[in-house]
Length: 290
Length: 196
Image 1 (cartoon, one colour):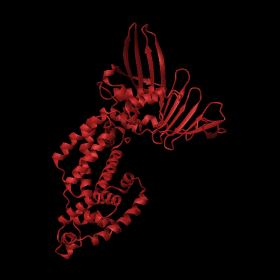
Image 2: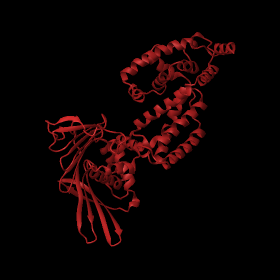
Image 3: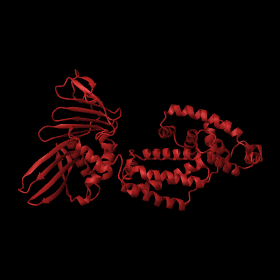
Image 4: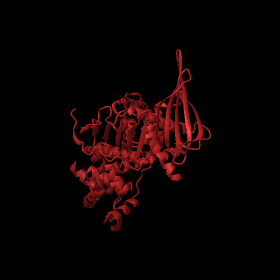
């Protein structure tokens, strides 16, 4: 008999239990598991499809301008792809990027050519705050499943529930953190077959020493050639992307900047929609759409 | 630092396993034995433990694409949740539970000295554990056989640590009482013969 927890621990440790696994079962099951995995992959996904679906979900959200953010995040993904060791002499390793990205809670992405728009993400708290170039603020809390929206000049803040089945019902379309997001995006977009030509140089960005990664791909159509150039600047000390630009070079050689932006990694972000910029006088009311 | 980097690499394995078979294969290799062992502790008979282990990993293979966890800890917790549910589903049928008890009784040793009799062997302890509620069986197995910490068990069962401590205290009292009433193998067989 045993007297207490410690006593039972000792008793169990003295038991002679045969739990040696059969190598045959182990191997047979391995084959079955991998086969079931393949089969599941061939069937259409009913929910939580990572990769393409996440990307499409983000890209479709024109109201909150998440499309812009998606492009930026793709750029981070590009950085990840580039750093998988496919280029000789990479001084920053994928493991370093993963480690640095794993420590991130808050990320702020500021983008735009003429007018800036801003996206705040908290991976720990599952918060997504979009501040559009027109000043509109949408504050989504995916833990409490509440969304608050404020229009510039508005007297009210509209509160609504986040519908799980809606396009934007899941934090970042279902990705649960920086790894999931990056993997989903670069996994589907930035495979070698996509035809990117990638170069790497050392440089500086806002007085910081950075590695400059340039991915270039040319798309030819009848009568025109279009070259897309994405540049990602990676902070050598912090091992994190700090900025990006996306340019297009047309047949006539003219280059125009499609988009550019910066990544920031603050300790904290807005605790509520007021801290995100909504006036204190605005009152929270149920959304009229409800 | 090297260990930390390795841990992050391992964590990334879970994310990769959503889409890549080789990563899932590595997770399988890593967790086959702990899960099989857990099943043996819950189900006593190795053949049954093999069947349930198979069900667990096949469920993982079919569901990992929508698994939201990212770290090895998330994945391990998920595995134990599935394994506990499958083991509970197996023993929920009375006929199966009887079969397991009969197997335990067949394996029981006859205690010859009072010193030996003061300490139950594995079949006797198993028979007493099997009398507990399924969730309580899981708690005992995770805590004493898998040596998981309170924090880890609380995560797997989705309860607060304080609640878990109180539960375990009560479970141990019941287990002690069940151990007093579990017959040894011979008595068990006589009881069975009399019933039939």
